[in-house]
Length: 369
Image (cartoon, rainbow, N blue to C red; front, side, top):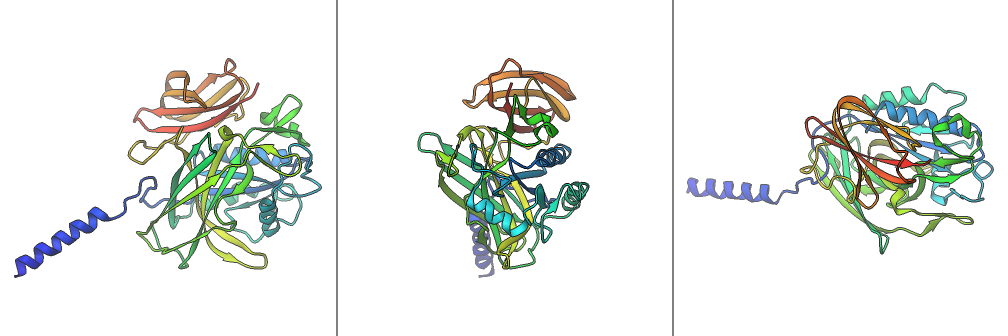
């Protein structure tokens, strides 16, 4: 009888393991937090390009660990002339954290209010470094698949808890950003890497929140929990009223982040426990089994003539256009490589960096001559 009971127990254990949900995208290994810098900005703000340059440098110094959103939301400093980059949801985020002066930024929503650049120019980087050294309660990963004919985006996000959250319910937010929007910008000369002729290349522009504005509630939030959520979103042809901006499918990227709690007065969600950029299925990895991610630094972006790639033990660099056609392949055996892209047409390209261990990093670059 004992043998039969033991056999049944073993069979049930095997059945449980076989049916246990396994992560497709997200790592189950403990890791430190990534960082989201939400920067409040405007086209008529003369100091804002300096703020964007500051954030760009923070990102370059922490490849694959720091992400940013540029939120245009202040009426006088963010005009409704073309390109109108204002959104109602962006304005709500600004009201929750910003006092209206620009530029300001909130780092992982770890402070009550956004911190200004001009008055405290040295704080954004130290605040970021402090967050990067903290252990994350959860990891996030996922992918986006866009049907270019119907403009329907299927977004899959996985959250895996490597430690217990302090509260029972957290909040998952997914946002859509757009790169390479050409338009005017006061003070553009302070950030020359984004100057295109007499115009400015606006990057990381907030377009919409796909989840609930302050996040979809998720639970349980205990160690060992895997949560998978799928969103479906029809991407509009343009965003902004009046003088809206065309939503270019090849210039979009999506971020997902988890906040600990929601609060009132003002209503918002905070702080951010972790954040990631979701992979594009057409140009990035589809699952953990397909690729081991390697971090690298790619700059300038946008690029006019020569793009520099920095990573450990680079073996090969390949550049693809938005149709998936390989445009360049460069062999190298160094930690830094300069690639001439002056012969490429203006547009979005995907740069794959492969190291000697076969690890791959996929980066999106904008070529603007």
